[in-house]
Image (cartoon, rainbow, N blue to C red; front, side, top):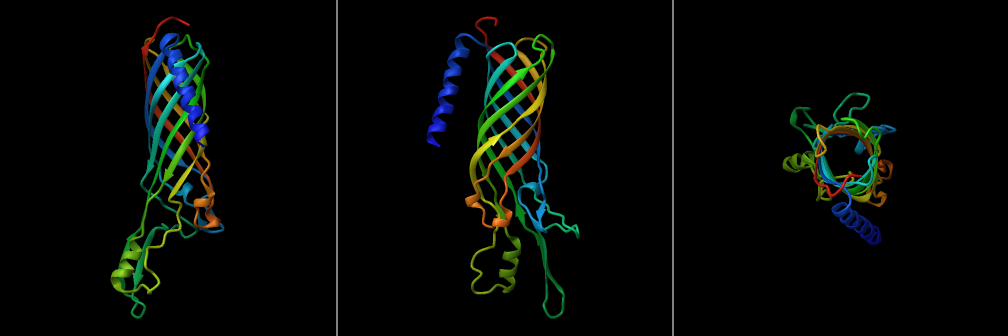
Amino acid sequence: MKRILFLLSFVFVSLSAIAQFEQKLGINLAAGGFKTIGYTDTDGNPMQMPNYKPGFALNGGLQFKISKKLSLAAEGGIMISKKWTYKGEDYINDLTWVINDSVTGALLAKGENYLDIYNYSFGIKIKYYFLPEKKWDPYFHAGVNINWTRSFFDNTEWAALKKLGYLGVEDTIPGNDNLENSFGFGFSPGIGVEFSPNDKLHFYLESGYYLIILDKQNFKDILREENFHAIRLQLGLRWNFIKSKEL
């Protein structure tokens, strides 16, 4: 892992030096949204990743122009979703809960547990432009990245049961069978289109498929082992601030 990180850093620094003396160098900033996809359950057992609601995505970095059609970008980003909902055959939110009196059936408490996800990434992406001489320029992109995926689960049902005195002596901590932490590699191919009013300012709309290989050793339930799949859509801006010669 250290060797891979060193190699990525070496490529990044080397391309920076080339850009300063031979190529164009630009800053990329993009914001938009994403939605995780995949099988929502396995034999009625809800999966974690596909059931997140649409979230927010933000990334930025540097783009180096290798030729008129080919560019290389080094970017860091974050994806956040703070809402998780699973609807099975009965269309019931899997995080909602109710507690009734065991004798009278009276409602004692109700609520909803909380589950979010944060993904931090850094990677390198190739962009291939099809019409570099035009103001509207469609392109293909594909990248590899390193990801740190984290989630937080708040078991409010456990807290309510504790308050009511319904927990056994062995129930000392809240239950949580969700993946909480993973470090892994990812891939992100996609397409986009760029509008360039001049040679310094560029606006772009970009879509892509995002795959992250999650660490299977960090799953607490073997039936819920999976990877992270998502579709992402972003609006972006690139500003070229170094230009030493035409390509």
